[in-house]
Length: 243
Image (cartoon, rainbow, N blue to C red):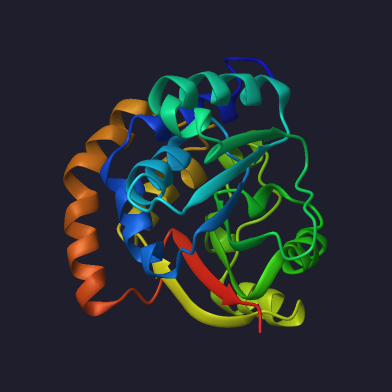
């Protein structure tokens, strides 16, 4: 993958944010187990949050990170070695190159943050995850929401689709997961995404604007949505459990 590709630029920008990934983590934290898998580690933006806020704080926790892209995998490994060398040395944080494959009942939690929208056969992946989870295991998925927000930027970074809540809930239930949480997030981001990426037809993230939004808008949006909820949002978090 070219280091200047839109996807790489997006992943680099996401790694520079703090409030946005922290908000996502806060919403999914109660559902984390101890034997974790993250599918699509990218450049490690969310991997670092899981490792720092969960694996380091729970001595019995471990995290396997799958990344199919060779260039991203190398960069991911370097970043995690720099940030979490003791965890990697202890075997509690591992990177695995290639598509997700796992023995049955290997994990109790599988996490996909901004990944499922890249997968053409999303249902097939959910079947694989279901088999990899122990009974009562948890699948956590965070995706771009609202199909009418699909933009040239979505296409440039390899998104196949954006989801709405009914479609994603149906996908989970049709692949044997019981949905225990499904919420829209980042309602304030809808307008900016529509103006810059749908109407403006931007094909790259404006890193400086994203950092300003992360610093000033995300805390306010989080405050409101955690108290009042969001009828719609730029993104969607869904959590399913294997019976």
